[in-house]
Length: 464
Image 1 (tube, rainbow, N blue to C red):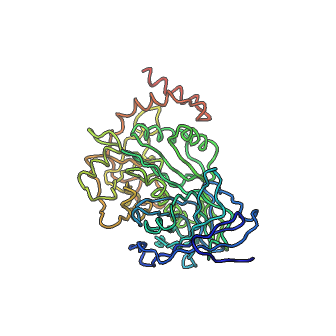
Image 2: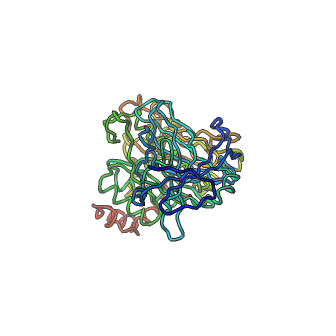
Image 3: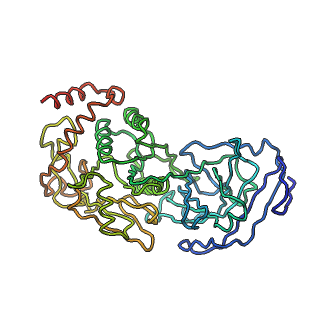
């Protein structure tokens, strides 16, 4: 293949692929030294037009930089971090621990015609922002960033990039598969919920109760990855997706060249599944960065605001007033052990159980807190912990403002579960009638396979 090197002002033929190379100063991850332009050059090489025809990957599909053990399903734009008023792209996915992670971001624009400009890439070195290494498994959760400073943008004209792909050594050898860049819209006075990964079987009625409660709490949007969900659960998800309340995306869990097959249905490698949920939590941090607050939680958890607070946003806004410098907010959890049995009658499953643990955060090892965070103030998220960026701090919300109820059965590994000290708590019962009314209005025949008995129970409850 013939190759030419030209000055920045050279005319580009339709048979050329040009690469604008941006070189930034390397520095510690926390400093992000991207304030200066060392040089800007164009590299162009002839390619037959059919060889650089592009394919946009489907949501959830992983892109790899060449043969590197790096798998990236998400690329999200940030306006002010780390390069203020610059172009910042964060990629989230998996890596093989201690393998080569050096690669290039190859950025593309869309032409006025709506066609992707497959002839010009802007090449930027990617940096490893964070790798989760608490447990070393087959594939680690990892985040990368590519940044272009304001001065560099002025030099190249604009940063109106719409797609990205990744190359191991040079964008001159970029693959034909590209990924759409996510530009999170800004939402005011909003709360997003992150369900991480939903898989296998989830009780459909439990799902409907959970979604309807979150709507009562004025949640703006729910996001989840999905993997091998059964049809009844997917049917519920598709209904709330149609409403615009749920965003879901399939996940393709990466595995190394000689690694084991991957999945989430038990039996499974529990530590790898945990690391994958860390990856999903950080994915929410990026794609939901336009929300004021994001809460990482499960579909069997309910946060009940205490009057006069009426919503999740009310709780978090009040907590922000109490601790203005906070970037993350902890919720202590009380477990409602379903093994203890129902204590009252109701057409709703969650309203039948009103006995919870006396002590907070009991899950067998006394840790079960949940976290909300302001996306631009945190470094990274885990399943039940958030690490804030300087100069921000974390803050546990006073129990006087809420109760978090976690409905679940005892795990086999939990000690003393069935004999744990417990108390009756009716805090969620004021929402029973409005939930029944709202569910009665739903097209349950469309959402649930066996909706007849539930519809009858809801009708009879309202007719009392």
